Image (cartoon, rainbow, N blue to C red):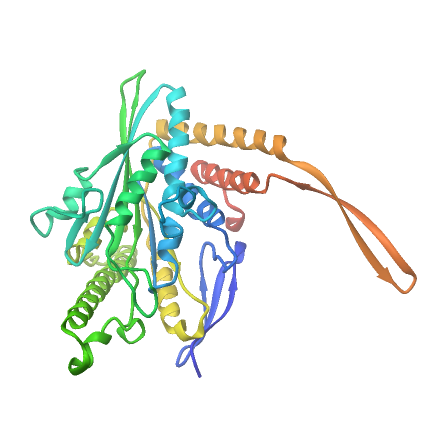
Length: 425
């Protein structure tokens, strides 16, 4: 028998059903599951939209995308490969990162009207092995020690401010052009390191002078891969028929894969330790140490892993039976992440501001829905042995995207106010 993904179901009963030799049937439950026909906008509204609201209202947020090489992580985060045209960053296929920047800029316009001065800046870095590189400054290595690299980034030394979409697109193009890429058997445009976009938002109330800073980390993790499938080591197998150029190129691919996998291994160890820590604290036992220092990646993400940030994890897999074992491993990782509890909190003033912000968004969405929605009559012809009958039905159309965003905003408002969710009743 072979491993396989048997069923994928989204909505309120989101789950993935798998089968594997030695394990039998296994069901994985998640907050949401997206099928192959899911749009980028649907993913954004479900996963990133709530995090943007938290970020703008003073809570640090993190979104991590994890999965096998070629499973669609970078597409989810950034969209189609940049080709120099603005359509890639403005069209329907644009990913989470450009959409987040768009929504943040829109929110800051509202903040300005409310008497709040705000500055937002972007860092765009690559974690390659135990080194961190600044993609907005020609890929320059940052930090002079094992710890200094991630501290250098988190202290804001790699930041570049932006105030409009043109500047956002230029920053994303600059960073994208510096990424390490290589063709493998599983992905012709495989990124060969972990990529992290960090947004830092500084807000100051002009009336009372209070200041608040929040950070949003968006991590596109390098793909976990098996050399046997990615064939990154092909040039090293037969030295007699391989040129030195091919040999050294293959050796570099193997080094990249090893660095990626070691970072992911360290991340998994941290997730496992955090889950064990929660169990130990509940049982009154001494909690284990969380090994954040094992890699630059985990040190950079330490605040998001069991810290005080709102964190979402997207795991990307494939329905292809050839890759079912890797997909099941990915689902297991997502399940373990779901068990980690972060403790993000807002003070009462921040809470009131957050609710007011969402109320304004709800009001604007309701206005858009009233303006765009219209009744449409649809006619259906039914036939039976007695003849033909035309049935007319009226349905509301024209504001489907706004209704999805309205539902998301209402859910966020309920969470902030502590109202019970439908699944909690």
